[in-house]
Image (tube, rainbow, N blue to C red; front, side):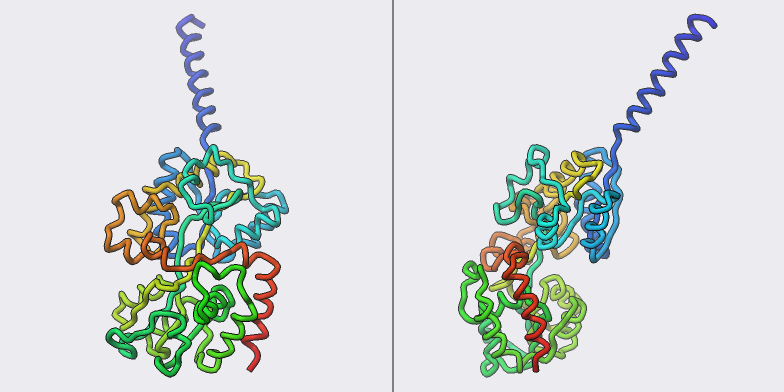
Length: 350
């Protein structure tokens, strides 16, 4: 073999080694959310751009009830998911059960932009939506329309069919605001006071809804004149032409957060991905596609969200100031668990 042939083999071998090293260094992560239009929107606005920036191969999965799957993966040691988008209450529950990694803030500097109440050692706030009071504009007209939960309870001034959600969270918060508790003074919830207030309105509730789709149908079809509903469900029926209106006054802001599964083999990559997912510019892109509000306040300073659009988002500075922030920590506490149990007997009792 000539010297030139040996040299050619050496170069080829080196190329093969470095190519293999490149493959070894390349990482993929699996991101899990709830699917549907929501996951499609976040994929376009946040997930794909974040993966591209980091040079990661992004895999996605979806599950409307991911928690038991997470628990099974962690307890079995067979981790196939890395970053999960969950209701914040599930993140807190998972922290208590040891299902999530403690966040490495050196790899998540964007977390510093989030208010303290929207993050902890194991999760960061991601997106928001609100429970609001919506009403039919053909039932209530002009300036004399229901604006507060006290108005919802006032069946003489505002007669008509009403609907509340068949879940204590955040229906107890709504009852307390109807009884005069300020949105920023709700916690710890006075559970006895809340149920006492709910007993007043219970005879006037025609339907206790159990899904977002049902709530939208009730108000859209005119089966009820007033309803507790999610802002996104109401904007959807408005877009379809239903005579329905709402305001964020005394709304209850709820959040989803991001967590990293305990034992993921892609821990650092997952942390970096979380950092990109809460980046202000990427967060600002999501509400241009769907009615969820970014939780990084800096998103509203990027100039990407038109003022008219920001005014309709639950987490805009103007709207968030008029609402209560649901405390997932309280609902995960012993008192919250007992309130959940008490709710069952409340709704079943005639």
